[in-house]
Image (cartoon, each protein chain N blue to C red):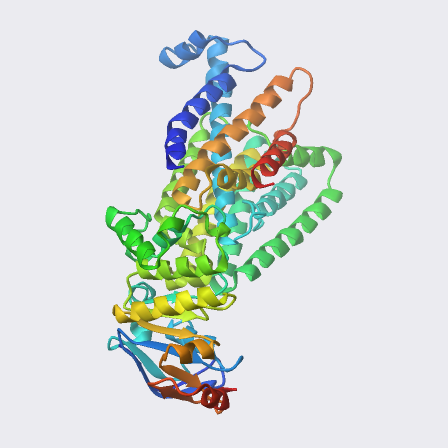
Length: 330
Length: 232
């Protein structure tokens, strides 16, 4: 049982590495392994393939890995916080916040807000503000279910305003918003990866410092409290980490659905544990696998049809998860 | 020693008045009272989840409201009712959660923690269950695992809310014998219960919440008829 876990510690990073290689090498332009290596060892700015690797391929691969891991961890935190397997990284409305500010930005018609940098800025601000709003509520709401309901209400309220904004916007602006909403791993530039990476590292480090409390929370709030856990500070920490992880990914890639809901469940089923140290590893590695595979499929289909990443995650994810649930849980 | 002196307990209006009540290490007490008379409120007050309306509770001479949560969790362990097990949580991992007060913030489990957990498994007589999933346990096994978890918490006092609800005769007998045994080994145990027959059979000292909202103490378990007259 625990030897299976130890095996996964070696096996899954290897398969992730192989997947990442395949991902980098896949795409419209054929790139050889030696070109990949030389683009790192002696980068030639005049070599088109080198530029493609460094500016497009590697950032996209890293984005898939970091986004998959971040969203899965955020989902894990929300599912444990609310003791509900239907919770996900967006349950508290961070995505609605980002969507709202993006819609607001594109509606102005100012070209900056319609550029990639402008979309990124609006989404970051929206995710950040809504993270803060939820955090403020969590300060004075004692009941966790109230907090969940407030989060859902704020999300619905904001989505309603967003849809009004969209109904009065031009078709071009609507298109920009819709494309953002479909999610994309391609828009992250090599220089921006570092932001997602840093937020991921900070998120994981903070998460590790809360492991004792998170593990105890599995027994319910009263039991955790009787085990000496300060529920309020734990709750605030869990929400902050979620907002950081999910907010950053959403700002850069748009709202990527399904991963953060499915992978935490998958991790619990496969690893058969409620120990969040193991689950942190499981969600990180499985989330990265999942989004890499999903994106690989969009890459393979690119010559025929451009499938948005959000369609793929659910398209391959839903049947796959269903299969596992039927097999493992009956 | 857990000591209550001239305390009124309740949320807004007084549910129970206690002149004096003491629970020493090595003592066991059954808390008896009708539904809605405030048994759970009383236990919550002892766990510092709600403040008393007036008066103070002291634990080992420190007043309860001065104890922070972490310190309290190394003095008193609490077993609520209604734990149904968690999917993926093994019995051993569940019992190890009892070590939470002693872990660093990363939740790292040491060799000592594991030793203590194994001892707790043995004391509760459920060594053979250690690898099972808590969601697969019967109600009786769950209750024993919860007691083992409280033992792993290594607190001088254990408080339990209706530990034998939903249990069959044999399991009730097992739990009562275990609790008495643990009190002989030095634990101070207070548990709420409706099992008057069991309490009287095992001659367990009683703290009864009377119809007049007063706490009445009996060092020797009174006749069942008398308890019923006082409480119900």
